[in-house]
Amino acid sequence: MNKIISFVMVGTNDLEKSTKFYDAIFVHLGLKKITTTERYVGYGDSSEPGEVNFYITKPYNKKTATVGNGTMVALLAETKDAVNKFHTTALENGAVDEGAPGLRSDGNYYGYVRDLDGNKITAKCISS
Image 1 (cartoon, rainbow, N blue to C red):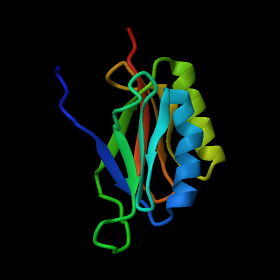
Image 2: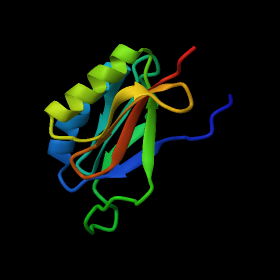
Image 3: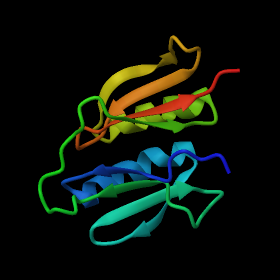
């Protein structure tokens, strides 16, 4: 096992609205909802239904969720088409465009958005 990150967690001020947003965009990345509580929702890879890799959560300290300046979550996509669909679906569901899908300086294909709470999320397809 060569994993570096156990899971990623981003804060939200509206769990219901955020859940609808992530449900819509994650389908293009092969991620599905695995667990739901009154405080958080966990998503994971469809092929590993018991392992949560991404959470949206109300802050534990009950204060307002805020965005980390310079913080970004990068999620892997199988194809360029999946990145395109992720980006388009995110914008259709209220995200802000942070960079249209396309090749970047490292030779890989990315699409960038800010979610409903301002968290920067990208989908990345590794070019070969």
